[in-house]
Length: 292
Image 1: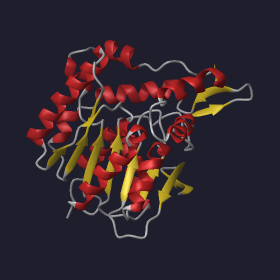
Image 2: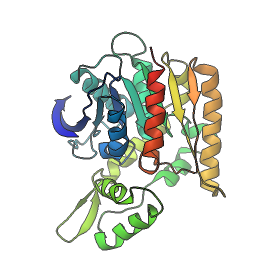
Image 3: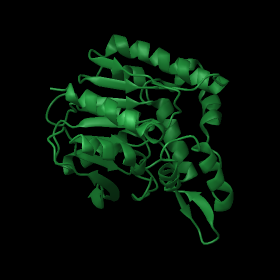
C-alpha cells in the first residue's frame, strides 16, 4: 500500500493507493464520518488481488489530511473528491462510499452524471440510502441522537480495552483495532483525541441533515449497488429505527434509480469495511465486473 500526499483546493490531503497488476476498473473509496482511509485497508488488499487499482482519501479534517476551519459541508467535500479523482487521472472510476462517504459519492454521481468525470457505477455501503428527516424527527432531536461522545482526554488505558471488546468476535481483530485507533491522536499523557474536532463533526452532521437524499436518487444515471447492514437480532430500538429508515430509502431508490442492485449484509454492524471486509470486497468486485 502506497501512502502519500497531494495538494487539492489549497489543502494537503493524505491518501493511499493499492496497486495491482490486473486490468480491473480503478476504484475510489470514501470513508465515513470521523473515520479515515484506513477503514478500507483490508478490503483494498482483497480488491487489489482481484486486479483493481484502489485509491482512498482522508477527507478534510480527517486522518492525516489538513484540518481547516471551514469547508465541512457536503458540497465542499464533493469538490475535494472531484479534485482527487481528476488528480489521479482516472476516467469513469467505480466510486464506493461508506456511511457519510455514501452521501458524498451520491452527491458526486448526481453532479457528474455524464461525461468523462461520470462514475462507471457507485456503491453505497450503509450510507447514502436513507434521509435523516424521513422519520419525522426535528433537527433538535436528531442533533441530540447524532452528537458523538466527548472522547477527547480519555485515557488510552481505558479506551483501548473497550475497542478490543467491541471487535472480540471478529476475524482480523488486531488489525481492526489498529485501524480504529488511527482515528485518534495520543498525547504525552497517553490520552486520546479524535482527529476530527467535535465542532467540525457537528458541522458535518448538520450538512447531512440538510442533504435531501431522495432528490438525488432521480439524478443518478449510473449503475448503483446498495449494501445496507442488517444487524443481529434481537434489534435494539435505535437499530430497528435505522433499519426501517433504510428500508424506506431503498423503496424510494427502487423507483428512482433505473439500474439498482441491493445486497443486504446480514448480522453486521454499521462498520461493514471492518467487520466484513472480505465479503464486501467480493460484492464490490463482482459489481465492477458487470459494468460496461
